[in-house]
Length: 512
Image (tube, rainbow, N blue to C red; front, side, top):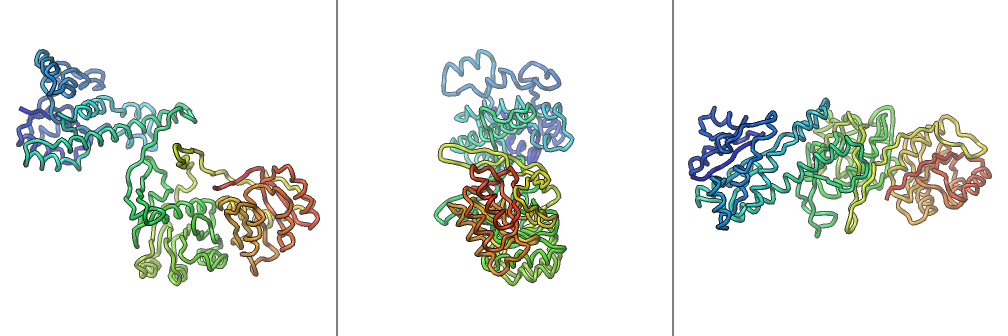
């Protein structure tokens, strides 16, 4: 008689699967909670102890780590010496393994989890059985996912056995599964040990979606979700309406919610091609929208919008008048949603902003042959630590405006220059190979809305004094920049020449 070993923490579909195995000539070996569930359902089982002749020990830590189990899994049926050894030692082959693992991920996601609880939920016997069975997939069917039960049943009913190609696919799935499981454990214990730059980087992600295409229509693409994502992440946004998200939508949405995370007051972020094209804030959401729209009423067309308050009807009506790709907000008033949903193609997403300030994950960027890893740029900006380097000091109101501009330039592609007043961006110059061109673009885009309250922020130091001079000649009254150039004195002198104030932060915010 064929033998199946079943030991699962997830009991989904367990009983009917076991019943079908029995109908197909299997006897069931089981243990612990799995055995109890099966027998309560009337499914006869053999205990692991009856197979091994050895009791569970060490609070269940050791029960299946035994030659009568692993010999039955690893013995090759096509090698006479293996068969002879198994017969001599009375090891009976195990033909099917159905195992899933202790819920380590679910355990460490609990807010009050202790290290001891986490360690007790590290499965040892389960991965060992899975790996043994997967290594010997030529002879053994190994099932780690309840969604595959029906595949096994169908092939047994039709053929009396599973197909080799099916077993090979299941084996690969097992090694992906155990690798992901070990990656979570490695990451958790690495963090607990305080290791910042481990010699091996083990990451695991779950497939969230297969994209229609990637950055361009000829590129295939897939969307993977961090196995332990933070709450404030595009992977946790709920799509309420509209077309499926595209590859570029997801990248833009991620960039936009990073910007929105910076602001506590009612704020609207408009983003296009990974750069902000308008940021507005106000006493209420509609006012913030008006300012974001006025910041660049041309570029906002086809953009991604993030609003950090529940969308009201008045704001929804104004957004509905435009073509927008994607709108993200913590909630929508019922009437506001109805207005926005009239356009079938606009994507409406809901994202919980409650934990937007939680410490973010590290971020990774792929390069040919490798991976770059860094902490996210989540520095809390503190004007009290800034240095006034000019003869003229900023007013309290100018400092508030400079802080707003500094937060905006932080999320603009380098070389980045952003011109703002206290409530909205006025002009943005991004991604130019030299800083003076970014300065000219930002001031040109500000155009007629450049007023006496306008300030300028630069994401990195001025290598020469030309940017300061150009800004001063066009009405800028205050500048914030990191400082640190060997020619800082030239820029400071230029600011003093024109009677404008300049502060340095000591912090650079390059974004490539």
